[in-house]
Length: 94
Image 1 (cartoon, rainbow, N blue to C red):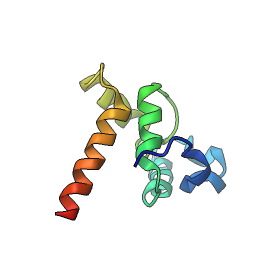
Image 2 (cartoon, rainbow, N blue to C red; image 1 turned 60 degrees about the horizontal axis):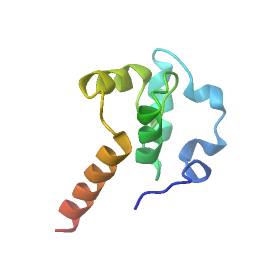
Image 3 (cartoon, one colour; image 1 turned 120 degrees about the vertical axis):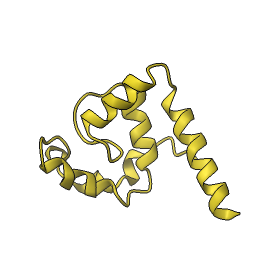
């Protein structure tokens, strides 16, 4: 199930925004905030579909997102990620 209004339940909602907009090794700490987030997929889709250039979104750094966008420049990321999550859930239930 896709959550449209995902920000209020994001794991980072109580973090300082500056903690997610860091460089270098500090990005690994920021990515840890995302690791157990219930709306990680929605967050990542938002960043990819809107080509957000800065910060850690959905557990991915700017560099990681740019690499995905280069490989798949015309992808509709919400649809791609939603389908992937559905397949993963169906496989886990089987």
